[in-house]
Length: 274
Figure 1 (spheres, one colour):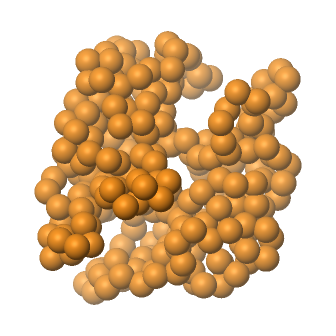
Figure 2 (cartoon, rainbow, N blue to C red):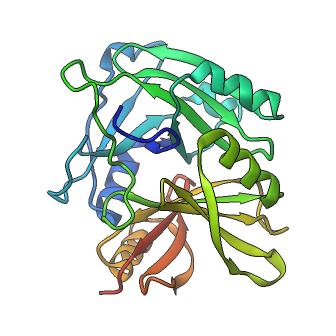
């Protein structure tokens, strides 16, 4: 694979209503979310998986930003909730799972191989934040295929990965040790300490911050790029989402805002003010 080890290579929305999610994110972000790509796995398994297609007309690579996985009644009954998940590229899923569990992390979906997709596992880090590790199976005609679902500046991609954790020192040590990231630079946040920036091969991929008492659980928030933050926020409201405050300017001059989609998945938006 063409991406560096430790890259975010896929993002996945788990939702209770794929059709509603398609309409909502289509309006807010501009994505096209198509039909189920695994119809042969419907029926008793209830498998419904759809691709998030960028329609911005730009960018080489896969042309997708991720997938939409429909939670069935049994999953919801067992406690699964709508939310966004990130997949981190590793060369050996089983070895990485062993390292994570040895450090105090947990496994929520054991290492699984899916033909044509690759091998993956859902884990939590030692502080309780969930994510996937994955060794993808590249196309036979393009063994060095590169995922472009993350970018630092393009609309319709994920542009920032933010970790909220009860122990930011331990989290930085964990991810820098096991995923090849570095931590350089920070922004003071008062009682919450520093907002600490994370890099992979000199590309700033996100940040880690200490969890405030009012935040329910540790976890990752993924910021989706939009063309106009005010237009996107209006679409969130019109589409039945729940914004968390107003857009806030960031040091780049752009703006961010957090929101819940109508099914309850939490996400961030980032983009210019039109």
